[in-house]
Structure formats: structure tokens, C-alpha cells
Image 1 (cartoon, helix red, strand yellow):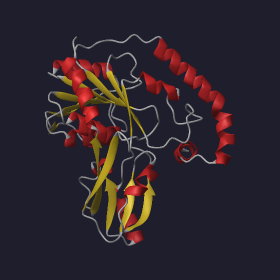
Image 2 (cartoon, rainbow, N blue to C red):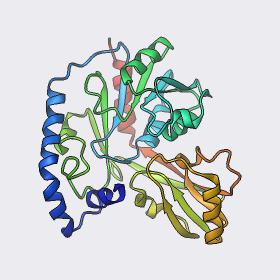
Image 3 (cartoon, rainbow, N blue to C red):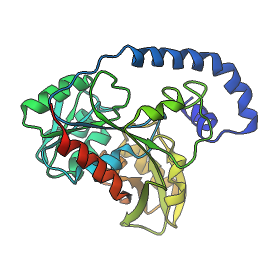
Length: 303
């Protein structure tokens, strides 16, 4: 079902529009409900700067590497994530000043990747982002980075929205990939588009002659343009899914492959696996104006 919706949302063809038309009334209702929610929201100021990195589109638009890159410019950072895909509940401090304090099962893959990538920052997962902010403030946070926080309409924050390079379907869920009406981009303090305002650069680690791509990210075909030579098979799992070492070993043998090619987000779930791993390492380069605007908000913040 996930692959079906990803196809009609992100690779929309003319023959998909009949299905989209059937779903359109549901999308209209969803859009109206989200508008009412935003219209009646009362924002709370938590007494410290909060920078939200979010999007309007379901699925991956690079929020995790964007947070890692932008947050690296600041001190006293606490990153707060919902912890998508984790097998735990409640508020958990994943890392404190770079020291890991939880397992990937407790944190979820994205939060663990952020924690390992920001040695000077702290990372918290909490379904209740407001509770997470209050906890971070008590722990001495100077600035909060809120992962996927645009729809947290009751929190006063500086909203940065990420947009993919191309959008095929501008309709709200489930007729399209938008969580709210597409024109709500204008409600963000800063909207940035991939390949214009920020660029992805790829590096590789431990490449082998014959590799199979194994990944559990949203809209995985977006990796295609970054794949190195030597990929002889592709296996897609649901976003945030955990891997079974034995099954991955069987896939290696079935394809007579030398290693598993994975993203860094996938790799944090394979740390203790005794399997040959190759990595795709994505890094973002941000326009200096993005960093400057975030810095201006943080430095100029007044409670």
C-alpha cells in the first residue's frame, strides 16, 4: 500500500488521475480540518529560541541531514524528535552533549543518526514535543531544533520548510502527498528548495564490486541518482523498518553479493550485525543565507 501511494504521489502518471480524483473529496476534508486546526491554535513561547525543520510533504525531504548540518553551527543545541519507528514510548534522552544514552530501538533510526552526527549536541525523543522542550530547557538548552515540527502549531518557533526539487502532485493527503494545503508554505519563516537553496553531496564508504542496496527510507527511489557502480539488486523495506540479520545474510547469498549498500540512517540499525556493509553518506551544503537567517533569529531572540 505504501508503494502504491508513493507512486501516485511522487511519480504521477496520466492514468493515476482517476484514482486521485476518487480520493480528492477526502483530501479536501483533510485540508479543511488542518486549516481549522491551524486557525484556532494558540502558540506558546517557551522562553528560548526554537527552530523547526519541517515539510509539507509526506516522506523524506532531507530533514535529518538538514538538521545535522544547520545545528552544527550552534552551541547549547538540543534536538527534539518524535522518534519515528522506535520501539519505546515517552520521553527518552538519546544523547547528552554527544554521549549516547539509549539504543537505536529506543530512539529510532533518525534520532540515533542525529545523535551520532552531533557530538556537541543533545537529542531527545518524545511524542509530546512540548514536554520535550520543557525537559530540554531544564537541562540547560540554549536553542531547540525541532525535527519535523511545522505541524506543531501550538509552539512558537522559527519555521523552516524543505521542498523537494520537483513536485508532481500538489493535493492534500490522501489524494496527494501534502499534509496541509500546498500554499501554506507561505506560513513558514523560510522555505528552501533542494538543488536551489541546498544541495546534496554523496560520499561512499567500503564500496565493493557487487553490492545489493538494502534500505528502509521513505520514497527510496530517490536514491537512484546517488547509487555507485556495482549495485546488482535493490531491496526496499518500509520506512524506519528494522532489519533481520539472518534474512539480510540470505539476500547476500542469493545475489552472490560482496556487501550490503545502505544509507547512514539504515546503518545505525546494523551496528552489531556481522555482515559486510557499504555506506552511502549524504551531506548537505546550505546556502549561507539560511545559516545567517537562523543565526539572526537565535541571537536576536527575546523571551
